[in-house]
Image (cartoon, rainbow over all chains, first blue to last red; front, side, top):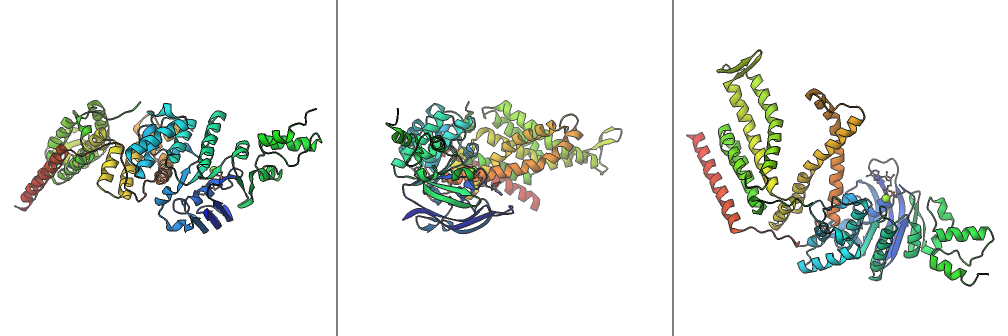
Length: 282
Length: 254
Ligand SMILES: Nc1ncnc2c1ncn2[C@@H]1O[C@H](COP(=O)(O)OP(=O)(O)O)[C@@H](O)[C@H]1O
Ligand SMILES: [Mg+2]
């Protein structure tokens, strides 16, 4: 059974003239790692809020269709109890500080306190998370006095530590340098190993191509493509929706166009390219 | 880095202080200015000596006093039309006894409120208040409203400074005499309120995402407990208040 399913969802923000999303349908299986791509303002964040049940409760507007969480209509669930199933990391890290805590350690622990996890278990899980996201050195800092990148990691840690079965993560690396980005993707990979279902919005397609299983391309209110990562990222059509292709795929396409090299299929990851090019050297 | 509150009053259970706060305000409402100015305000100042930050408290208290005392009081005194004894006269400014008393009466509740509320926050962490409310099974909605209101005030102050600066940068005068400042302040209210509300909404979502209103019994890492002294003080405050209220009602009736 699908853990999360959208059935013919459309949405219009209250004050907007036009609908932002129309007839969105897809379902996600347990353990899948799905990435949402689309140009800025296309409605990725909006779609995340819909999946989390924040729309239409918090952001008002007209919504049609259904969101099913483990087969249950999400609009029948209390917004607080959805937190037990879905973790949500916002795009803007600065607004996801609880405001009630004085240190990063306590901030990360806050969600577990709310879930009634036992004290010693809270401490163990927070310690583990601080190390995993490389924020251990920030543990006594005030959560409102962090840099963008630090804030982003703390926000991610605060949600991951709650260990929900589904994670919706909206542009978690926008404020991070390459090393920070790698750490975040490594963390997401570990989640995937633990059979978590992951929905990620991310512009850095090179990374997405390496890690994600399946890509949903949103363009002009609709999902225009829903396919495996290597299929989506090897298709130059993606460029027309305002998205980028991985560098590896661009290079391969260019080489093919110039007649310099032929490929069975356009590689989208470094390993894939290496595999295909091996043994071709003069 | 961390500004944890210190001082003996900070060790009291937040609800004990809340009981004191409400008792003080109710008594200030039913009694006249003498009770407010001569009993409650001095009492609060004495208590503030145990807040761990007396100077900080005094600064904020004086700031608050200046704000409304000046307005309400002067207004009242000037508009006094009674013919009670003239206290002070300078050109058209005439201060009469009755005006002064009216002014004291009208401000005493506000001044007591300002004093006890400031003292409360000088000695209580918002988080501790939240925890104690939740320990007493106060509903999520109520504790959220308390929390967000408390957070909104310092936020708004900070933000109003930013907005003022922005307006200054656009050439709007925000310094200089009172009239100019007041005139500059009003156009900034719109953006101030809108940005505060949208922030409030985002914060509400943040708390929801972290399971704030999940229907589960919470754990509290921080150990905040009501001790014997808290129970004694709370009961004491309530008994004293009931006695004083009774006395007041007795005076009204007979
Ligand atoms: N609360 C809102 N009210 C009205 N319009 C909104 C609101 N939030 C976002 N929008 C608009 O909806 C569009 C999609 O936004 P968003 O979902 O954030 O896109 P993305 O995440 O893909 O960049 C944008 O044009 C944005 O201006
Ligand atoms: Mg977005």
